[in-house]
Image 1 (cartoon, rainbow, N blue to C red):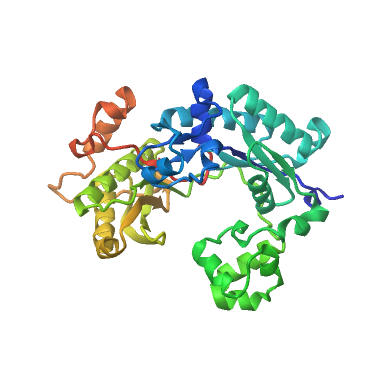
Image 2 (image 1 turned 180 degrees about the vertical axis):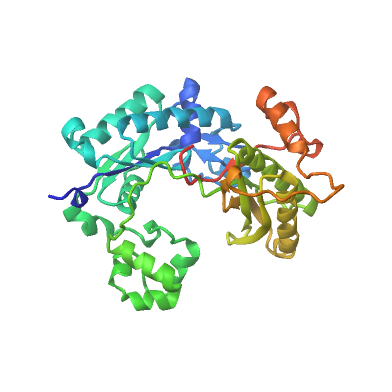
Length: 400
């Protein structure tokens, strides 16, 4: 059998990651319902999820659903350290690791059969090592394609292992709800529901032109291919990040424009620091919004010059946010995010020279970066950011 016909791709996904780290580090929390984050739920242990608590839920609602829950503040440094330890185990398993976010990755183990055993045996060992060496539960899906491996890990949660045999793929996939398909959110699911489509099998049974007419050419063709188990993408390690982002969950209380401006400033300040540390520049700025009615919107702006300067990127974000204020006022807002795209190495971009007599922009940035590198971000901050909670990082497109 050719290697491409075997189930050789692993999708490894840490279970309730932030909450699991808290339970690992404080034995008193083990077996208890744990909520990370007070105003908004950043993560919930499976014990809390059993009561209906979910990520991004307002803290008040979560405590009403599970009054016995233990609420702990987020510790981003601890989560980053735990992620690095787990990714080291991934890379010790195979050099072909493609990180999706801080807590999940694809691994290609197709070339290891002679030296490490079958993919299932490799997955068993990986789960054991993550449990023993990192102290965390992890679920692994094993399949022929990346899409099926990710679906398998979702179905196998929590703390499980699920192998999808190539000759049983559609038997496994088609009974699942349509929301298991990548790209199907509440709005798309509602459109499909209008056609009587409830399962992945229902999508597969529809002619592709019908899906295209309802969802558009790109989405229709994409979902039809996934519903038939088609996903030709390979695991691609070492790809530099094409974008980076951070977001802040806001709860459901109304926010003034001044509050939103401070939150946007904090996000931009953190992101541009990361850009400069990685010696990268961005050309595209995107504002991400989630409203109180659960709908979402994005607004983007291309910069005249790729940059990592805080002030230049902040000006673009403020313009986007100002344009979106009427929509926010009408719908309310529960999440604000900023993403920086079109990333390039700073050495590959020709920087604009200042005009004669002009003071170069961004002169403050290197000084702030030096202080943060030596003493930590809390040593020096903008006055308006004092007391602000850390941003919740969005999933990244490469390894952490």
